[in-house]
Image (cartoon, rainbow, N blue to C red; front, top):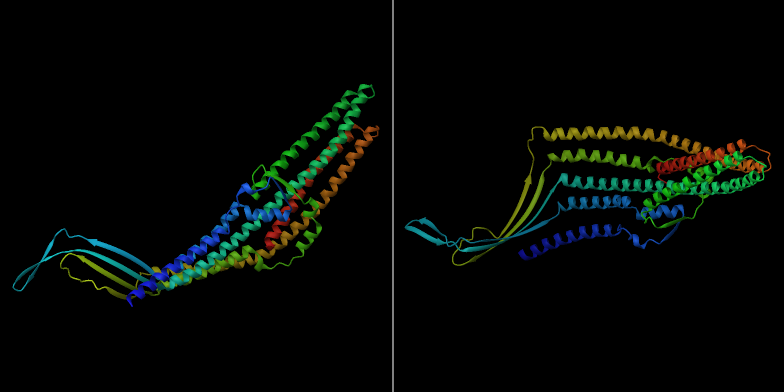
Amino acid sequence: MKKQLLVLIAAVALSSSLMAEDHVMAATKSHQPQDTSSVPATLSLSLGEAQNYAVKQNRTLRNASLAVQEAYAQRWQTIASMLPSLDGNYTYSNYLGYSATLGMMGGEIEINMPNVGALGLTAAVGINGQGIVGVLLNNIAIDMRKIALEQSENELRSSVMSAYVSVLALQSISNLLDSSLVNIQDLEQMTQNAVNVGAAEQTTADQIRVRVNTLKNSINTQKRNIELATNSLKVLLDVPVETELVLTEDIDDVLSPERVINLLAENFNIENNLNYQLLKKQTELARRNVHMAGWAYGPTVSLAYNYTNQQYYGEGGMRMTPPNVIQVSVKMPLWSSGKRAAGVIEKKIAYEEAKNTLSETTDNLAIQYRQLCFNLTNAYETYTNEKDNIEVARRVFASATEKYKYGASSNMELTNASNDLINAQSSYVQAMLNLVSAQADLEEFLNK
């Protein structure tokens, strides 16, 4: 019976350890980083593909995922603290030839103290209310870290979208300026030819050359901005800097009226909002903390089994320690000078604060939803206007260039048209980025 009990305790302890280890190892393996050496030299991605790639590769998001696994490990520690534990020890004592003298009726008896080895095994289990509530608190902590992980993922997707659109916008402007540069360079050559034959003044050719240089500077600035935006996207994707990124979508696919209209038509369900979900969990956590503080008044029940086997090396020896002992204990707190009562009051106040915060946030989220819809509507209207403006500025510049060839417009008109085109491109890019930001904010708010 004794051996069977020992085997059973050892089996329970071993299986518990293996369960915890298997759970954590399996979860950790699913989030192992991909070797960057496997990234192809050229990576072609749509917006959705870029977002999914970043979610898989980004180190910051992997850390948030590992935080969830950490919470699982912490929960298992709490559970394991209430499961049977098994401890073993071995003690060897050498008395160096010492003899004990016992006084008895009729004289004294001298007893040699033999060397002794003692093997001990202790199996114990203890359960209390705070441990059970602690498991519930761990469950809430896991849910909160999962919500935080989802928030991080949504933020990453929004950042990828902004970086992706920035690259597309800057490429579009760069292409526009390239075509404008070709036209004005032709005009520069034509004007210089007229100067060479005495049909125009050198100052006119110089003024056009200034326009050429201004456009070249704008083009060089755009190229540097494209490289900067592309590198920012590479950081989000966690790919090597030498990787060539090819964006397979154009700006009209990403910023389409249909996407904006569909997003504005979404019904607002507060239960889908991640901030609301997180506050609900925090409120639930505060409520459980009240229970945890209350269980400080509860008993702790413990059960222990001790097995001791002594082996004497030499003659004699008295076996004073029983080989098998079972202990059952109940520990009940009686008096703490009001410490436990104050702890309960503190947690109740924190719970009331959490409920007030949740109620206030619930009201504010409805207002915030309306504001985000307004921001998106306004940003889309501005984007549409700026898109039309840059097309008009392009046509005006092309018309002014053509008229200037035939002497129908002045150098000042050409200069103004060129400045208008450069200003229009800056306003267009800013309107585009504002639209992306407004769209991403609403999508994140709706947890889309």
